[in-house]
Every structure is written in C-alpha cells, then in structure tokens.
Length: 198
Image (cartoon, rainbow, N blue to C red; front, side):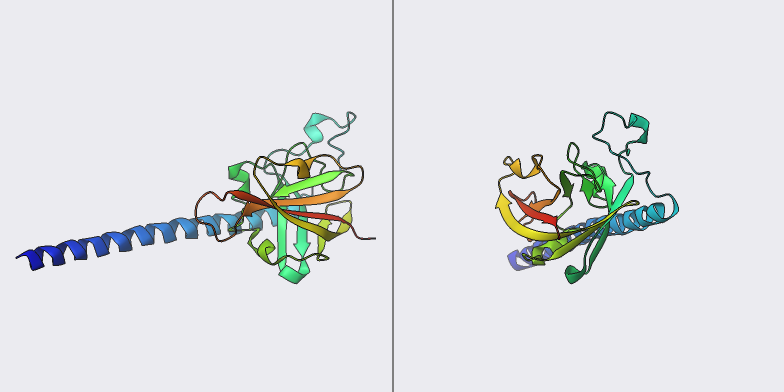
C-alpha cells in the first residue's frame, strides 16, 4: 500500500515538474518573440520614418523634436559577434523587451559625449558575452555613422554607475547584467566602453 502511495506521489510530482518547466519555456518563448517582433518593427520604422536629426541636450532643440520613449534612434552593429540591433529611446523594462535602449540623461547617438545604451543579457545583448578588446562597434543614425573601438570591459556593482558620467569627448558605453548565465536578477553589471575609431 505504501509503495502504491509513493508511486502516485512521484507521478504527480513528475507531472507538476513537467508543467512548471513548460510554463518557464513558454515565458521564455514569448519574451524572445516579443524581442524579435519589436526589432522587426523598429527596423521598419527606421527605414520608413527615420528620426529627425536632433541635439537633445541643446536648449535650442524644441522638446517636441526630441525622441519619445520607444522611438527608433539608431542601429548598433558588431560584425564579429553577428550583432545588429535597433536602439530605442528609453531604458524602462517595456522598451528593453523590444530592444536595447538609450539611457536617459546620456548623450544621444550622433552627439558628442558619453552615449549610454543598455540591453537585456538574455536577449538582444547576449552576444556581448563574447566581446573582446579592440572589437569594432558601428552606430548609425540618419545623419551619422560612427565606428567605435572597444577599449575596456569591466564588471561593476549595480550602484557604481560612474561609467555613465559625461565624457569630454565622444564615447559609447554598453551596459547589461552579469553573469550572463545567472538565473534570476543578476548581481553585477557588465560594462563595455568604446571610443571613436581614428
């Protein structure tokens, strides 16, 4: 009798585990599909209706010409990693589900200063786990194409965001969570700093 009871319990636990695993897979699949669809739509928006050239940090630029949350700003490409993504305006969770986002209060793509871009480590910025010093990153807007060379890769605490401070010249700072294989909310930040290729 005890053996039958144990067998029933084990079968139910096995079924419950399979159901939980299927739920996790479904959530991951939905997240990947959202990201793919968001990137497809953002790329189409860039082709059909490219953003106006702007200097959002300038007092002379009217607020209504500045990009709105979710607007497509630029494409970011790293050929060696086979990475090509559309960068959107904003770093909120809804935007980052669709693609990497421009970090508020940093320079915009095409401007002089420190351009901050963040993305999820398990979707659009996953290829960054293979990035190396001297890799070339291309950032394209309607009015400019800038090629950057990676000159530092660091891992920091989430509270230590000095990497996003303004810079005297043009710089590109990519931010994602770390470790890449961590399950749940990752405890560190992975920072890639690049400067214009001369």
